Image (tube, rainbow, N blue to C red; front, side, top):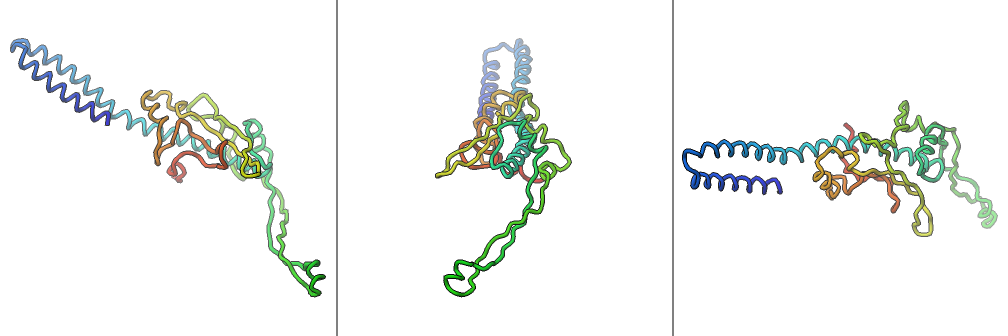
Length: 242
């Protein structure tokens, strides 16, 4: 909208200048103003071209950079979910989380339904009474690292923000829900960290984004310290397999 208004105002200004030159400048001096006019027109045209192209380039750049950031956040989420599955809580420390991935193991179990005699009811009614139970057998253990990251060691650098000399902010704790205290975590970074070389006005607009197909707000994040969630705040197309 702003770009369109600039184009309209520029065209109107050029038209006005041409009229003024034609009306007030002597014929023998018009060539000077014609040269100056074309020089100014070239500068204005370049500025308009950049104002139209900049947002298009910015959108392409941010999508590529956000995708790399989000891949790391997905790894962080997988690591945190595994940590909770084994320990019952999330980790708020990068060193502890990496050490956990390096050394921890899942317990593999098998669940099966069975039926047995209910001794108490059998005594009460004088006949054999049964009840259903669930039997859980321990089959062994499996490496958390191999289960999530297979042959990759990218979990050792997942805390680093791609394209920025900084780490994601990581927090973990508990929040009260009903009468229970439930574990939560959050990993996040400010968008401006990976957009530092982009036009300031576009970075500011991006930090104010509220859109269905956008990463809303000033941060890219996964998890929450305010609600029970392991979701990221990015749109679904970042999760699509390529």
